[in-house]
Image (cartoon, rainbow, N blue to C red; front, top):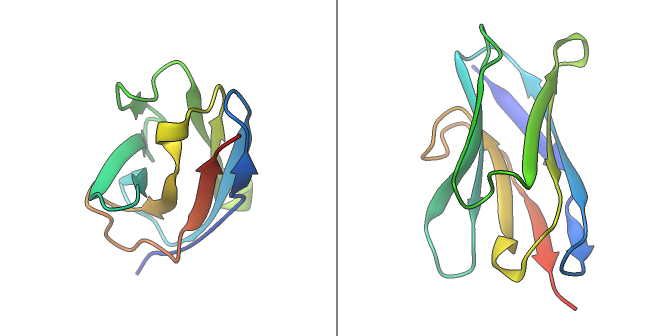
Length: 112
């Protein structure tokens, strides 16, 4: 079974950057970053195909966020640039767009 541990969140000003990390044990065909803003449901942010390496992004983050992986270290990353207040959320690494196998998450707060 896949287990994940997310880290790297924090408080950042609008326009700033953060890099989230996800330590992964186990294998799944797809791996996702999802997020949950206050009072809202889970939102898929990005996904990567573990076989082909193909990566896809939600329209809300396209051009600002970059997902990548380090297979040697069993790590996934989410580089977040040009952050906006609406990016404030708990971010999870997961095996499905609805958050299966997600960890405890990491809080990202974008505020001046």
